[in-house]
Length: 144
Image 1 (tube, helix red, strand yellow):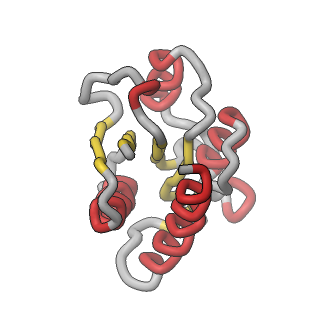
Image 2 (image 1 turned 90 degrees about the vertical axis):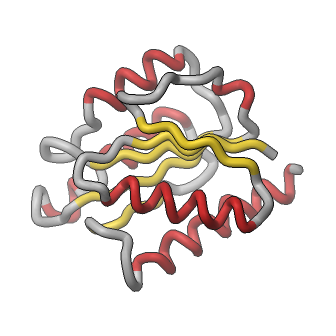
């Protein structure tokens, strides 16, 4: 099985989540390619069994322009995308927390709920990542 983890990170929080997911997938024996949105070349997503898309939330609940550009560059809506991201409740409170994750889950009609992490994933929030990823992988195992 081949997966892609595409993410955008300014502060490093979303990158840390992506790296945590990568480590877990590799331990499961899954081939993983990493893509830093806005920096790396966008591959043909049809070559991947599953895609993990990570973003932070920007400007009072918005999706960063680089992620929007990524979506446009891909040019279609793959049905195998799981969305994750980091956010900060001090900017807009709970109503806007990880709004970009919610928007992308809705846009892609993802079969998985989005993973939302408050700032850095270190510590107790790593369990949130593990539990979310286990849910995604359970679906992957069932369909494999």
